[in-house]
View (cartoon, chains in turn green, blue):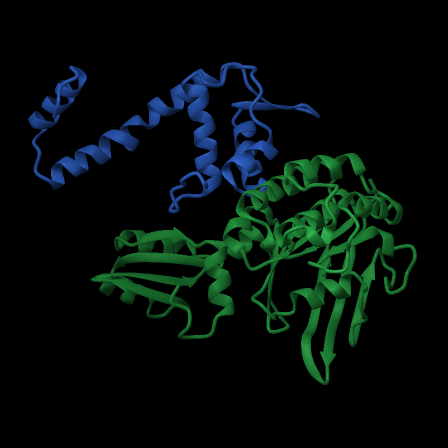
Length: 295
Length: 125
């Protein structure tokens, strides 16, 4: 299967002089599943639209396989961007949509699409505008995966699916990435149920890239210390504390990690419990204002 | 449902230990294929790099071996090797913490021995 690479160089996007995205540089590599994490309005959809060449950046460059992808016939069919479209006017059944996908997408795997549709219990003969919102999302997920595009961008389409179908979707992503390694970007704010899918995460907040790390590096940026309040306070007095909470005389502090070997020893010796943080906790911490973050 | 992991220890170690457990108790026999990484990712809901880290350690320790393009298998002698390793660790992992706890709550050596004997005989403590 063909693979492609993606590069953004100092990309900004403005509307009426207001930065929607500011100075974003990143690289996407085949075989990696990326989590694009951000709250509502963070700029996730704008960023994916730029990669998909639905629009041009105000400043900076987008490159797919070294080429400018905007109105580029060579790269365009190899980028699949699904973003929760409006299907109110679509009276054709799903099967006709599959026909269209087969025509425009060079790697579209119809057999796989039909198998996925069965898994998601998506009927092929019902007009799309009569499907529930969740089923329309499922259809987008099916096309997004079955398109087998070297650059697959899925923008929160799963948030409309019900829990059983989300779970099936996650399983399909894992299998599909193992079978046909490519670039898969999943944007989401449902971090806790998707964290294990991501090899690498981007955290976008108010148009700024706050984190661009392999998942394990990202998670190691936070460490919890739990123990009696005085001991915790003594230990964290000269450290970068992200958050604290207390229960009676017990205190838990989230500090910037990773801890140095000596620090870890010292913390253990003074009776503190060292714990890991979840991707969700770090995401919430990074993207919520001071005082709002009593997670 | 996420299987419960202890958040104080690296998850790759815990997955590795669960696999070791299955080898020690005979659920996985020598030369039997272990579940694929994809299956483990789906089961544990843990990233495949985490799984790979645990499996690579087991390969390095000679507990499992890779067959290119097929998968991973339990090595000959893996069970005995793991049992030996656990016997060596038994004192530190189980006995020392037990004695520390006993001391903390004021149980004498005599009382501890009595509890062990009662449990062995299937009685209530």
